[in-house]
Length: 137
Image 1: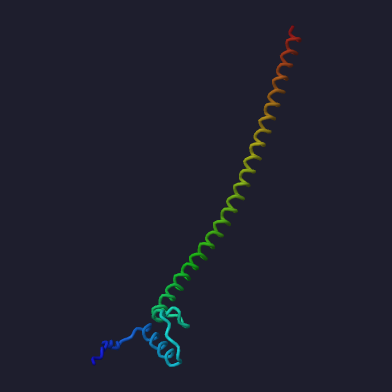
Image 2: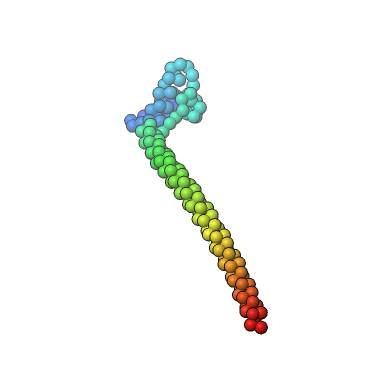
């Protein structure tokens, strides 16, 4: 009678963090009489990549987010500064527009007075000429 023997796999001597975790879960499960789940994702504890790699990745993400937050804060300060400058420029523009309008009205008033004075002089000259013509005549 010949026994059929299946070759046994040699245990790996170097385990990754995940493999080490899986082996620990299997050992605990078998000692409690439970069967190890086929897929490790279904285990009670999630499988994670190497904690060091994950930690470095998270730190990089935090640094990137802090830089972005600093940039956003700087941009907000710039926007507020630009808003204040724009308000100041608009106020100056309104003042200058009002001043220009006032000067235009003053020029029109002066022109109107000069035209009225010229008309009075012209009428006075006509009256003098008529008076002289009457005296000479």
